Image 1: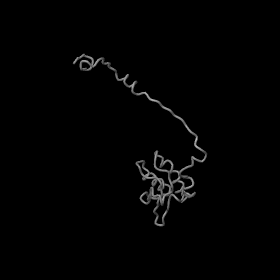
Image 2: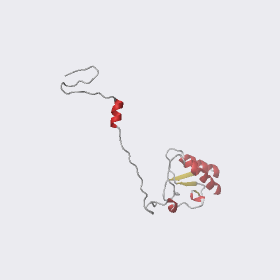
Image 3: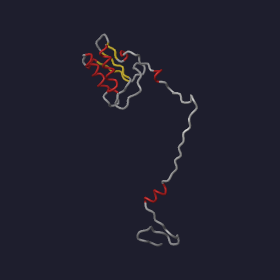
Image 4: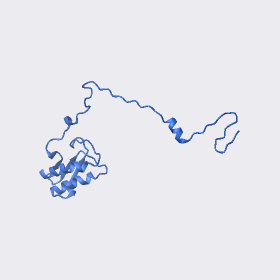
Length: 142
């Protein structure tokens, strides 16, 4: 075997040994080809799978979001769920402040698809920002 200080140990008789550094190795092995094309689909092929606007069950009045019971308890019906944004605390606080009731008398039903208005989901920390003004108006109307 032949040993060179800066090269690998190579058995005798294997011939010429070429060393390659990491950059050259990546240049040689990371080549590729990208081909992109687009085809226009026939008319009518791109129809929506689910038309949310037609299936929305939210009535046009605000009272679908809250119920004031005869016993003085307030129930909020919210399509959102609590995922760490503070919705379970923020929305009842808005209603309690507008209705001038203690927050202990405000219940919140969240994410029940049979009881709550339709909602696209809980994401982007938009729950209180979007529902707060709606709930404020609903409580003012109640």
